[in-house]
Image 1 (cartoon, rainbow, N blue to C red):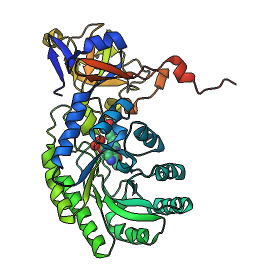
Image 2: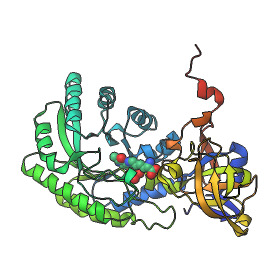
Image 3: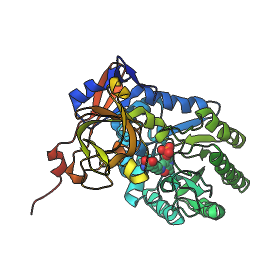
Image 4: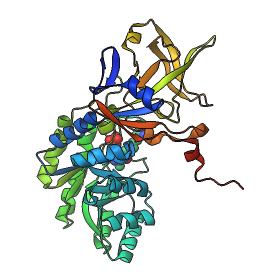
Length: 416
Ligand code: LLP
């Protein structure tokens, strides 16, 4: 997390002391580094520079308009999974011809909206969806550009909840059935086959699963060509992992290194759908210590952020490093604590049995690597307003989402 460093004994994001943001905006707050976003986007763009490609940022990882607009201006496309994400991507200025639509349960209304917007491609996940899309497109008098999401049955060696390319997964069309589905697609007049897609999982820390899966879908693309079905786009999904603790994910060049030769041989344009690796290490969650509490069994540090703000620790047992904003704290004697939020659930923790320097009430902490699937998975559980989001650029910052108010929370409700 190069853009979050201690300077003058205070944790900074770029040139902004995080304490200043906490004082002005309050806590909990998400803070993102513009430079970090552009660096990770640029790393993909450069790694795939030798072949035609589009980096379609996976909007689900962090859908804030400030983040999306920053990436769109840098040239990014978008990988969307809902009508809501289509709305956001268009609003943020992503060109429709750089938008791809993934997901197992697209509604007809979402299909219509995406066809109206004239997006690049639909990643279709089942025969039923293919037929529905064909129907909707014919009703509209257009042809929907499609890729089949092919499930290559490769173990991505990651958390089971975020593995998507195994044969037991709900995602994609099993590779053994793909040819038959492509044959049907080629006969439909409301769709036009343009690509092949895969996505095998998230937080991958090895290149070999990408290489195995890539080889399988590249072979499929070749067979399709031989049958006269033209494939212009090879969509290799997202999933490059990041360092949360001691992971050593592959470099962008190594990731591209296994996929570029396949793309070159096929003469296709590569689409990449990274989410976590673009925003994950570009963001932190700032929180303040409310109380210390000790029971005969445990020590707790109660903070003002909770599982509704960052659900990853409760949901996936995920590890987020915790740093005090005050560098002097880092040398305090350590203790083993649970860092917990105010929510009425025992699963409301941000860290368990963590060895940390002793924190005092009022201390400010940063939960690191929280830019991806942080705010995006936040909820209003316990009627907690969602956190503010701030985008830092050099020595300045912008509140890209104000903190929700209580009025926001009840705005759509009616008393009877
Ligand atoms: N494309 C598709 C079709 C996907 O399903 C996903 C993520 C991506 C791209 C982006 O993958 P990434 O580059 O971010 O690994 N909430 C979980 C992660 C869920 C990922 C779901 N799909 C977490 O917090 O770890």
